[in-house]
Length: 249
Image (cartoon, rainbow, N blue to C red; front, top):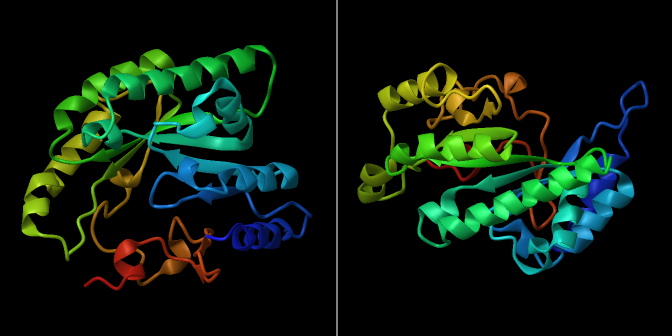
């Protein structure tokens, strides 16, 4: 996406106010379907948001490339973002070592604690984004205990979404059935995966966690109805559901 398109969209919505004069735009979610910290204009995007007083919200793979893995870079993220979500997929899929991934997350939280002690306010929360699939169910309990020990604020539990066009081999390897999903919800809310310290969110707790959009006939009650997706060519979309967006049947 050209940075000019991102800037124009942010400025457009940052200018909107409700009847009381309060700004309607709450945050800018930098979603790239890839690693946002590798976006060549990410520093400019951060500066635009800081200048306008709008918080960023990012989901990163935990590698913290370029300057973003330094204390200065991490401090810039913590002060510019409302939430930093770190996906567990990089080490699960074998592309990044678990030890280095954990080291990066721990470094971020230690720096956040130091800044908090120094009375720096409005720091980003740090969350984990866990894609639930058949191959990682035995890793969830130790991951949760580690997350509690380092001070993670929230976990987003998102069951893997299998599009109809994907091969059966992928489906059989990753897909979770409704019974397993119901058991996971119970474990997170009442059982071994329950945490008193960490807030639980994610699509696991929606009525239809992995299927077709449950709000297809009543978009006014969609939990994402107040979001606007800006595409690289500048056009806007108001539906995040991948099946509807790309017309998969």
